[in-house]
Image (cartoon, rainbow, N blue to C red; front, side, top):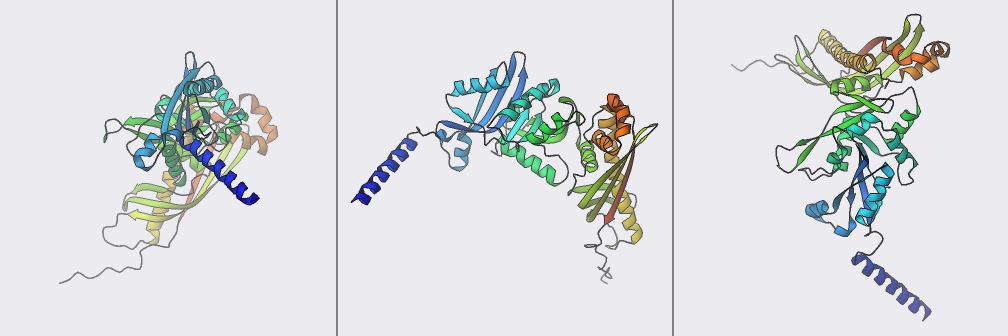
Length: 388
């Protein structure tokens, strides 16, 4: 009898919970699950925009997925007060623990991101493994964008940066990485940048494009790097583990090699004429595509030309990065200063007070070696005699 009573009570409680949930009065229905956060600087303070999943709007199917995603914007004198104003505006509690991306507006990035990152560092809801981006223009535009493929901005940015990281074209930077760099007075930042363009396919949609990176000196945006300059930074930092390298040779035409593995080693020496950095990159690659007019066979001399062409292309990208980042902007995203500090402490102390100028004029020696794997080379295919 007692078991029957307990089961009846449990059933009644479950029915009440289900009824409350269906009526939209459950705690989940009153919560907005934030997926993307954008922060912009305004004359009167800050503007914060979020893209959030709204359980009260339901879902299901492609149409329902769009309906359940909502966009909210609020302003305040500080970033935190902007978040608080947002809560009062919607009458529901935004839940930030599932946030996937943080987007920093261009004006904010130029004036300094230290105070904004402090908010994300101290908040108990913020996670350290959140992808962070800089937006060309305002962050609110990227957060609130409507895209033709119906992928929400948070998911789209993650897909773009994951793809860029996997093929060695784009760095993936998260909140924890930014926090570490800002705490280090000798290390600068390179963040992936996104921009929005009006879609040519659909009038009311936009395309999200990631074809540059944002270069910071300390906590301020100073310039953007194009894809070639970005790739040079990644080669120097040993962050290219995959991807394609394309170049042209005089007798073999256009060639594309697929990177199988690569590594980078940086050595430093302090001299009376300034610091000298030696960067050695080694890589293994396979032939992905080549224009061959008469034969599938590649001789050793042609393999050597391909390896040299690869080395010249990679070295050129590294030189572009050194010239833009180190020479022109006096930024150190390579951790050259920290390497010099550990390798030659006595020498470092003599240049510590003007280390940026010293690095700007430092001698940088670049060495690239490539080995093309012979596997997959179509050297065993014989040319056939033409039919009579």
